[in-house]
Amino acid sequence: MNQRKSLQVDLPKEEADSLEARAAMQGVPTGKYLGYHVLRSYRGVLHPEVVDFERGDEGQAGTRPEDLS
Image 1: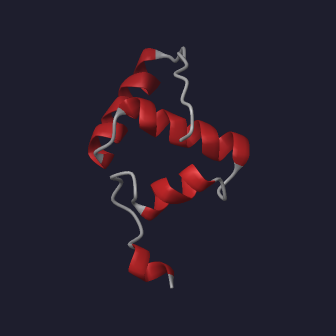
Image 2: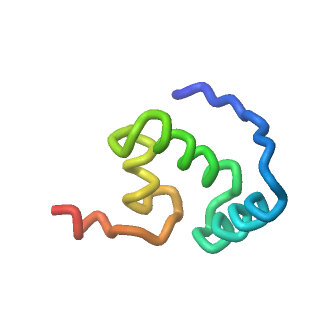
Image 3: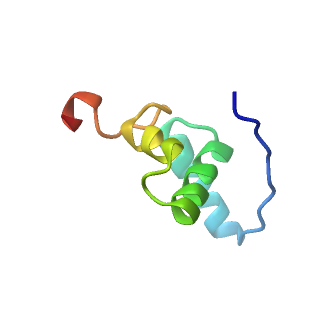
């Protein structure tokens, strides 16, 4: 199992509010949503957790697995 570590971010209030709202619309916790964006930016679209999130394995309404074949 992967060890996890939480990090704190400092954002302008308007952007933070928007990110919280987007996470809620996706049906995922804000921390998970921010983590997705950080990993996607830092490691790229092929990182396993990014792939899972974009596939919808994390609760996000996204591409259905059957559409990937």
